[in-house]
Image (cartoon, rainbow, N blue to C red):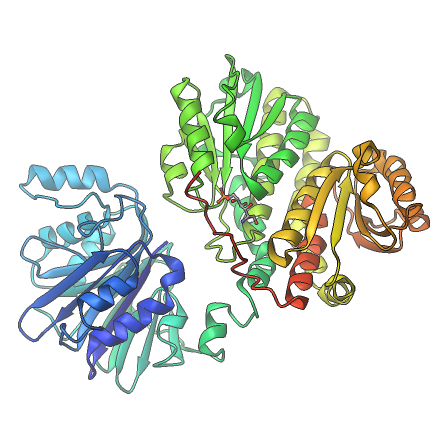
Length: 608
Ligand code: AGP
């Protein structure tokens, strides 16, 4: 995920570009670069490292005079972070400059074709191929050249493009990666996201799929890929600059929680065609699926918790044995991978060192690895044999919510696909499961709208010392994630326990008023969990129950009950986790914690 900014107008471009890039640093920060036309030629400066390095290199833009330019902050996908791999990329004589966010999926054959025609490439990136293709097709007409190239590239892009012999114009194009353009009395702007230009204008145009924009100092023209000019309506941004990054929410975490209906939908629907689950990216034929003897799921943190749910769902529906491992354990325990084993690694960032190591260990032993990954083009995505993306979009808050929910969906889809191939479920059950899957986004929305009650309840526990989460089966997996959500952002000690295990020691920690959150969404385990609730209540606990609508019996054992809508028990995690996410969030807010950037944590643990 990268950030791009462009400007053309009356003012000096470099300071505006640097300022915009600083607002996008959450999108990518391993290198940065800028190209500005100085009246005669285009000057380019780029540097590995944070944006600060580029600011210092250019004296905050002072050494790059000119009123038209483009800039970029990079989160490396193709090619390691380095000066030469930083954007902008350009053609041989530096007359065409390109900044790009996205993945050009067919860059290898395109690069080979150009190399055959004598083109030389200096970087390992996919983006440089775009710059060289523009050079190859350039006939003096920028727009026609751009359209020729866009018709030939596959994948996703948000592009900023400038031509040294057309300094009165800037160009932008979008397919699959976000892009906005804006206008003020001082000029016109390109940006990956609104915050980059909000300081200069509140009048923006969200560039739609496969649209191309030609920007002049005082005007913008929008085109389709067929060069048909189109009219677009501007959007007036009401948010303030800080809120713009959070789309009006107080924290990224809350924004991302509210994006869950969309991320569940975006992960689910593209894989359901004519009421049949199709996971093309799985890379396994039905025959190969039928031969799977065991599945190893390997991950860390919340991704591991999703994997624990995956175990119950895949074993329950497809009757394939599943072993779930913490990646940091898996990689060093000399795991036993037998013939017919399949390895699935789960990672939001796709950069978690332990998970990447587990992937490499599995591949080194000759086993195919499926990655369930959120960040397109991340290391795990690139090294896995096959990738099932969770289309959750950029997740900024350190505490994962929307990506976790999308991981659950990916695992449900896999379980149902495997069950369908192995015929371990009947057509009737398959249809009912599909119906319940499709209802999840609306049900999540419903639960999110209950935030006021959760906030009110959470405020009672901002001073708590210990909070326990208990559950059986899938409810244990839900408890694991509910406990982590709370402790990682509120710093309150919390443990998740298999409810049946509590009396083997930990129950000694229960005191008068200790909060125990009992998750009970599995009907065949209701009674067992109620017994555990009674046990802790007898020792003074205050019991919060999260259970299915209709399970009224639980009220005799619980002090406070949160009901979730009816769904298949296999999918209950997707619903029960919502109030627990909100609970953790509001406890942390009540304690004045830095919700989006909790102490000691990083969004991606890229070291052991
Ligand atoms: C979850 O809220 C934490 N941010 C953390 O446990 C995270 O899930 C873990 O580090 C794994 O990260 P990944 O999904 O990017 O591999």
